[in-house]
Image (cartoon, rainbow, N blue to C red; front, side):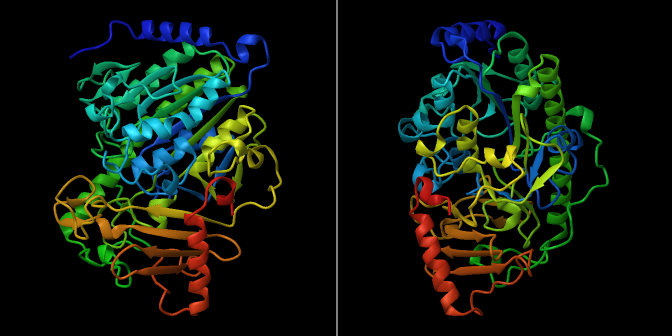
Amino acid sequence: MVRPTSWAALLVLGTAWQLALGGAAGRGQRAPPNIVLILTDDQDTEIGGLTPMKKTQALIGQAGVSFSNAFTVTPLCCPSRSSLLSGRYPHNHLVRNNSLEGNCSSLAWQKSQEPLAFPVQLQKRGYQTFYAGKYLNQYGHPAAGGVQHVPLGWSYWNGLVGNSRYYNYTLSANGQEERHGDSFPDDYLTDLIANRSLAFLETSARPPFLMVLAPPAAHSPWTVAPPYAAAFSTTKAPRGGSFNVPGKDKHWLVRQARSPMAATSINLLDRVYRERWQTLLSVDDLVEKVLARLEAQDLLASTYVFYTSDNGYHTGQFSLPLDKRQLYEFDIRVPLLVRGPGVRANQTRAEPILNIDLGPTFLDIAGLNASQSAMDGRSFLPLLVSPAQPSPWRADFLVEYTGEGYADKDPSCPALGPGVAQCFPDCVCEDAFNNTYACVRALHPHTLQYCEFADSQAFVELYNLTSDPHQLSNLARSVEPSLLEALNQRLTKLQACAGPSCWG
């Protein structure tokens, strides 16, 4: 096992480099607010994903604002995280899935998108920037620069190599390989992220700073920290809504799921549901520790804290046992809680916020003109600090996804692999090339979702979420053709949008 000789030494080196860089704060100007983003992995809202996080809801949500309509623009880790970093829809940043072939953390991404990402712009503004945890699924791959590649814009870098793990992983610590074993609590990744965050705040942080903390929870393999191994012992996955319901009028990938599910699948997804909640308790502790340290150092009042996830998740909805990648509410809705300067406590806001809006909001907080960036998202800082809604706000938005197998155009399920064709222990295909779709999700004046599939059928799904919140009935064959035509035209426009033309 190889470890750096001194993490503190890396912090000192980073501090010296940042001071040499200078910036607004170094020139005696009043520093803009600090920014902390806590980004979880696969945390839903529709099936109770925030329920176990009592501290987080109290310390961020009740101390600020909870957004009840927060969405990812694509329900899979790497393209979603690429959207968050770049502020762009997938059709503009061109990351299609979690593979290198799908442009995840590829050399092409590093050349074309990393220079435009929000940490680069904040660092130029004088921000210290700190990252710890999962970055992009193929980060650290030898064909993408290995652990030596530190993405642009980060003063302090603790990037997880590959996909989410809790033990036995490798980090890139400012470009140096750092291997970890299975010792608790030293190696448990969520706790390590918390501890390194505290070390940064205690020894090196100076305003303004940006911290992005990306723990592995609640992603597989759902490894629970020992203190929480007995938590939620009687909890089961929710049985309401679309749970264990056949997707009879949906696209082929959902129709092929066995319904009702086998008892073996239900028993497994109940266990996984509990373990997901258990892993999130460690994230809840992380939130408490970081906010306590900010308060102890008199930094909390000048810091915006954002809490969200890269995508949602399902556990048995439409008889799909465990995954994401689908167009439905349980996979595209995410938590979003924010506290900070000028944010009134105990608010709930219903405006639709997208993960591509985070980057522009961070730029706005830093005093930069987000509208002049290459981002498709829109700053929602005015919603945070003003009781009134900016007019007009978006009424609809785009959700798009490219199924696995895109490179070779294979319409069937690819070979068995994580999240592609999984066994739970009953095999259910969760993704394929024919799972490539684009949707208009509208909230005003009507709550609708219209989706088109890029398959041989040109399959269409349409839902009225006011009367059918669980998306049980596909209305595509029963509505007036004029409505479908209007929605198709809106979808076509969104699929070609860039910058402010994406705002609605």
